[in-house]
Image (cartoon, rainbow, N blue to C red; front, top):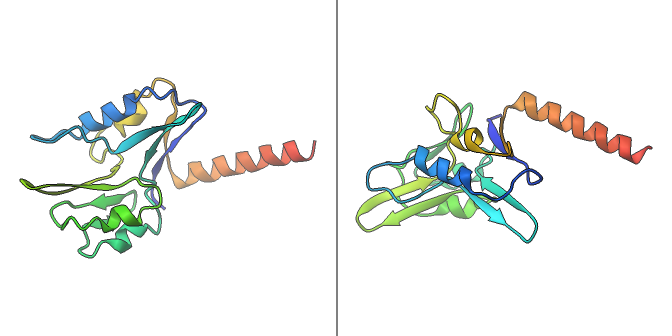
Length: 158
């Protein structure tokens, strides 16, 4: 299983600091403001939506040229292989991947890469003022599931 970032809607205040940090962590010359996550807002709720680094990622299967691949920790994107077909974007059930296409530049795959190579981990997690974002591993997820199941059982049988 890969690692991924869990977002807490209860803690998110919709400030979009995570979006800015993400975009700044991925700045390249001539690039536009392109965060790899998007904060979604409803009337009384906001939460960042980003790549879930799926174990059997449909985006990887949908890519006809192998520009996306499943690694040990994350789904890796290689824009140099991308032909701009948008198959990955259509296949993603979370709407967390896009392909930026412009006439002057080759296609660019825009998806969360868990800030690979960044020593301090994902920039969005580091800057969130309410700690609404957390990078999780398989073991941490299993512990959280166990905790939530126990809490649900306690509520049902009290």
